[in-house]
Image 1: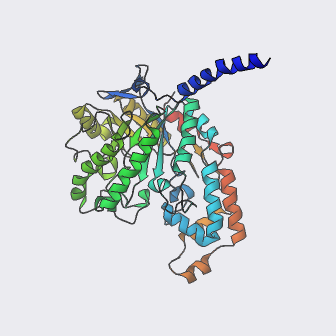
Image 2: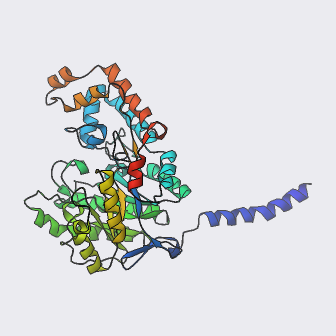
Image 3: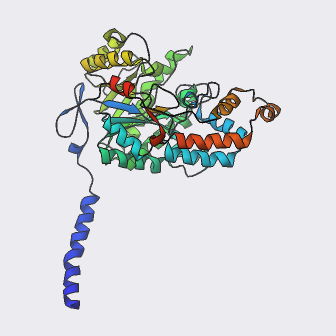
Length: 413
């Protein structure tokens, strides 16, 4: 019997080693989404037209999704929460928030709508030791995205990684959690950190075909700056630096490039094919839902003969969105609508407002410029702590309201 067991081990161990090699093998280039002219193609050679949604608020909190107006960026929200109920409670709140706001069930549902792509907005701090969303060191960016990649792989969805909040800020507004100006364009240190983080991300995901590509910056350079043309002139060089950092590790993935003035102005680009795997990405909210609204994007796309993708669109009537989806399909511009989930309507699934959440919103809008005002305006802690715990329960997919008319308007089936 012992002799048989030894023979069995001799036979099976090499098989196990070989199986492990197969599991850990790098993917071939043919297994990634690829570009040919203005089109994307799946590895099987079929045209791939992006349709899907954005997981906004999950890894980059925004005030309006909590029904806040003044308290509208991640660090403003965190500070207000800590003033209201204390930092230790809020550290646990953020962990529960990240654990429950987006789960496997959300990804399964997104797939069921006909979507094929998810765009993931993330904050650069998730890849640092800076204080962010309850952690003060050893941020969990890779752990969170790894889990999401696994869910997307399970359900057959592609993932775009979107650096929504860049070091120093690329917009200077609430959307990038910055300090009121796009300091990225003035700071060599911030630019280097941008490149370092993208290089680390590329090293980690270089062999993962579930990821469609890397979107280097979200909505750079707002329209209202008096020196926007000066900053516009720096945009392409920053994109080139970040791309070069990625290419040191990863030759497989597509790079996504957004236009200036919040992904609307492509005139600053002079070297439109500085990399062999580029997609340009535009955004549009509101206005006329006809071809005229995106004619400039179409013209640029045709001039460079590369794909154009509408990374964000939404917050409108179902009829408007349906009409605009038709226009985008007719003009070969894929799209991911904003957002997937928030407290309210005009999304895939809506979060029901918890009882006494109005006490949280009232404090968020109150005068908090002095410690005396913080103390005077702070609501009853027991009540608001319960409301915040109730929010965690309400944000779970099983407790959300599915917005079927909204989803149907996106024409993904």
